Image (tube, rainbow, N blue to C red; front, side):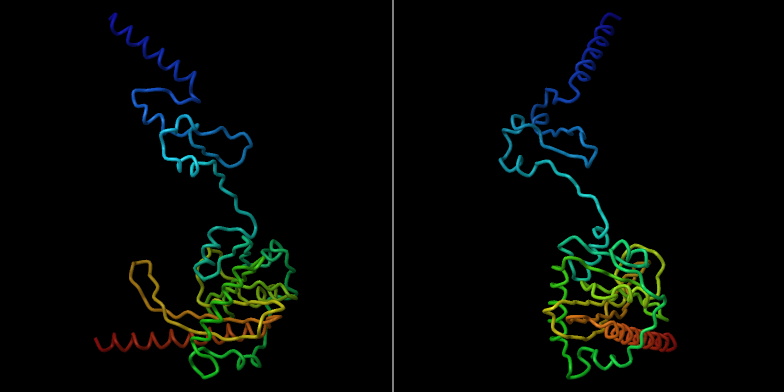
Length: 291
């Protein structure tokens, strides 16, 4: 009984000592562990949590690189134009918004958040028949080779990445289920607002790659260029299997990019994707019939 009482008193004394030194590193029989421990600093400004390495005296036996990389770090918050998920999606499209200002615009309210005017009429009908001949498909005629298209596309992506702000309308190509994303730095006139009014609104979902991606670059030093390309890629389905699908890329550049030329590129791309999908369906039907 006496031994049990002494043990209990020792435990209570140890607990009191720990409570009195809760903000300090307590010496123990494992000095190496105590020397390398980190301390959680109090949050004095009600902002992000800050983590800091232990005092220099406690890390004197560690390599000199540890105090340098263990400096206090704050994680920035998101704000309009800075959305991590959407930025990663743009990065997958080959555009990295280095100025941290990229607006995903899926509805008219998003225009106001981006500081742009609302469309005057919705839906907006655009007659782009006269511009279809000015947007050639890469590799299909002598007017535009794949090499030239790829070179201009990469230059356009690089320039968009360096732009002060990016505006990215999203929606379905009218009368289709092909998703379209336009990535542009141009806020000339009502270009972005008109694109929002032209595209059909899609169901709300997290950002993902679209069937048609349009890179539209504007500026006083931009040369006129227009073209599109369709390529086949593999996509992974929910069951883990993979299937071939077609995706389209449209590139439009100029001092003041034309709405009709962008729409012409979207229409031509949608028609090409539809033709590819129909061809695959017919081929699959023939294979199943042969079996």
